[in-house]
Length: 90
Image (cartoon, rainbow, N blue to C red; front, side, top):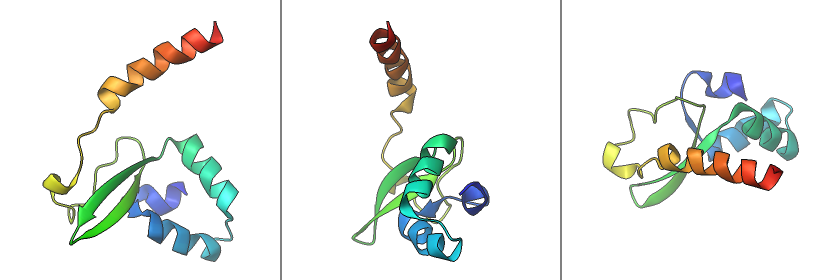
């Protein structure tokens, strides 16, 4: 998974198409996505909805115009997740 996404973000459709070629099943892909911290970003291009998978700190491809990308809420959600996980653990 990491090598597939290393050069650039890819659509989920590309990932699922490449998976059988790499000998990967659904569950290992989902586990790798979670372990690598891959995030999904949905965009709307030419009346089509696409979901891009990105590694941490990876940017959307240049082919995706900025106005098609929703705002990244992780700056606010990340600290809340931390607080909630501490609360749940303790």
